[in-house]
Length: 203
Image 1 (cartoon, one colour):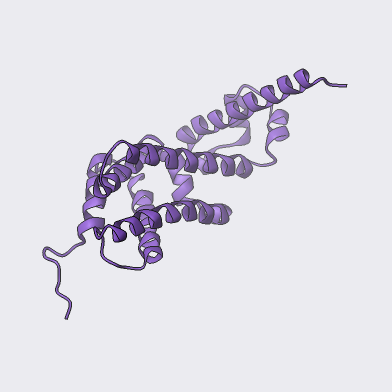
Image 2: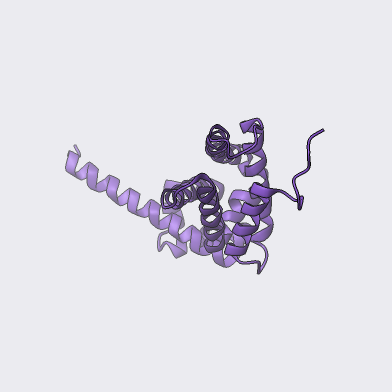
């Protein structure tokens, strides 16, 4: 019978191998892209046999689904940390946009999966988007309560912001420019001020 200590060591070994597989997947993904990445490539990069790979993940998609979850969580944490370092609602939005585009710059291939992959990940992506929509709706509601933002329906604005950011970043990560800083500044100014040179008057 396995002791608790042995079980803990076993669990630690499994977790270490799992993390090595995820790290290997990131490396292979950066070199070959999602469609050209093969299980044999990932197993080789992790220095394990293909049979061991299947003890952890039944398919390549299963591995990348987990990678998407971890990427979304890491992105959310970086945005939260960036906001926590500044004061004022508008500065928090600016800091969040900058963190978002810097993260995308540093993890282009991962973000191609999160924001650019096809039907395999649709349900998971809806869950990922929902997390960011909820967060955006809280920021929008806060701005309206403080009379910094116009009184639009928060859920409509939040979905528009997240949808716009997702589309923009899915385009941008395929380009060589503009820089993350330029993208963040453009998106922040667009969200806060819109396209009009002067605000239009309501009738």
